[in-house]
Amino acid sequence: MNKSKVIFTIAVTIIIMLSAVLIGTVDIKISDIINIILYKLFNLPLVKELKPNSISIIWNLRLPRVFLAFLVGAALSASGTVIQSILKNPLASPYTLGVSSGSSFCAGLVIVFGISIPIIGNITLPLFGFISGLVTVFAVIAFAKKVDERLSNNTIILVGMVFSLFINASLLILTSLYRENIESIVLWQMGSFSLRGWGYVRAALIFFIIGIIGVIKYTKEMDLLTFGEDEAKSNGVETEKIKIRLMIYSSILTGSAVALSGIIGFVDLIAPHVARKFFGSRHIYVLPMSAIFGGMLMVVSDIIARTIIAPSELPVSAVTALIGAPFFAYIYFKKQVV
Image 1 (cartoon, rainbow, N blue to C red):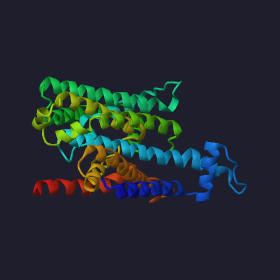
Image 2: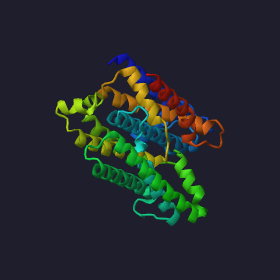
Image 3: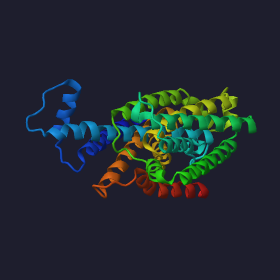
Image 4: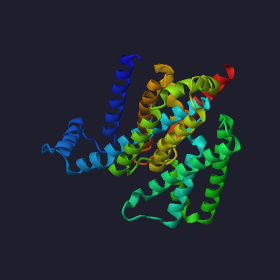
């Protein structure tokens, strides 16, 4: 792998994240941002010229938002890399397994019935959404295994689609019965990083570490799976077991991302292709670089979403769709030509 490309990618990512912290309705100098970070982390003294509300804006609003956007983008992209590899489909997405549908339905239930656990407060909705997303994936895997013991790729995709359609229909019925909550449910689904604090960032980081460590353990197996399941089996890979484990770890990444930010598409499709283009096909390199590209793209999308019609905001999912839809078409038609 070309080290200069890695260093350049990381440097660009840092610049973009720093720019995201700088950009906002209130102008704050970069020196003040550094001063605030050092004050919060190491209790170093603040400069006298610093405005009192600047600390709250940077530390409580902008920094958590930028870090959460990066972690969500990284999680979705790493998950997308895994799903595309094990299903051997360049257009496959982590949402294929029904994670987003399960999370959305449970989020709808939490919103409609006002469910709240006092100990965790505003983390109640993300927690329930995450658990529901995982339960949906386990159900998809179990049903697919019952239908087809070999867990063929087509079976997984079809079962995931069936579950997604059924759960989405259930959510439509729920919103029809409780129309007063439609706006809240739709706003959650559209995806946003607004007003997410450090609690969300910590949760995203924990689940990202668990998921990324889990999938990186199987990079060699994923390399073999790209040549086909027969080739992988001839090299001693227990394909069914490996696919199930990878789908579970992938769902941890996707489920946590959806639960914490809503449904944001296309990042998980774009980043893996970009990573493969620049860093080859070996998953030991593609996975981390895909995560970095995905995080970078999500931060850029969030900058556009909150500045293009400021002081109002666009849904982040709308921005990623505008970027991702043409890319999706390009990949599809390129595949058809090949």
